[in-house]
Amino acid sequence: MEPNDLNPRLSRISTQWTMVFKAHAGFADPARAALQNLLERYSGAAFRYLLGALRDPEVADDLAQEFALRFVRGDFRRAEPERGRFRDYLKTSLIHLVNDYHRMRQAQPRQLGAVEPAAPASASLTSEADFVTSWREELLERTWKALEQANPAYHAALRFRIENPDAPSAQMAAHLSSHLDQSVSAALARKMLERAHAKFADLLLDEVAYSLERASQEDLEKELNDLDLLKYCRSALERRRNKE
Image (cartoon, rainbow, N blue to C red; front, side):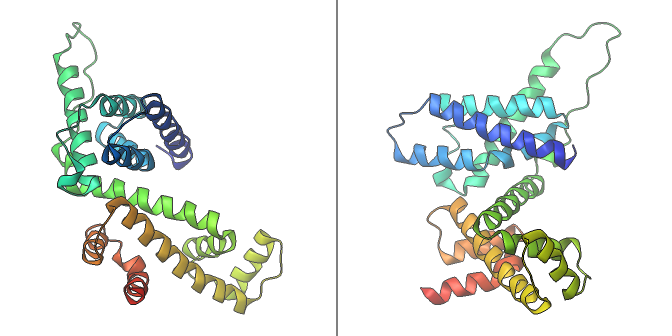
């Protein structure tokens, strides 16, 4: 699926999950309400994983909605997030959903001469590595959006550098001057880029910390390392340690 097609689907999934959860609001258990908030926040990670496992956007869309309904119904109560990381809870629940889908499809009678359905996803698609990729993409995407909301100039500077890694500062300054409709010198462009890197790192750290909830610094660093994100926010983690 092309990025231009994926983004509208991710937005729709998030909106639909919000509607489903609001329709079943009234949970008395604060822990369950907190889990609901996490699920809404990371619905994009769930859809990315389903899309990779099923290779069919329409089926992934349908199963994403089925997941939301099963959750509010309590079908995944055995997978308690208190037993480990939230992403482990989400991964386990989604794997159960995908396996149920394949069992149901295999049990359906087939007409003689009918085209064989696509083969089930390979076992590797339900591995830790596959889900980690979806989870990491979601965290980075949410961080980019947070940076754009917090400081559009920093967002523009960092995006330009990533898309044009070898461009000189003068070219970046010209791009930012046009994009921001203000005069930006090469020196200012370099300063904006430096601050953009620091801001992105802080926001990414916040995003990972939120997904872990009340995590220690050690837990946070381990999660960053497991997700191969520590390289982005090592300095931010150090700044946070120094503030404690």
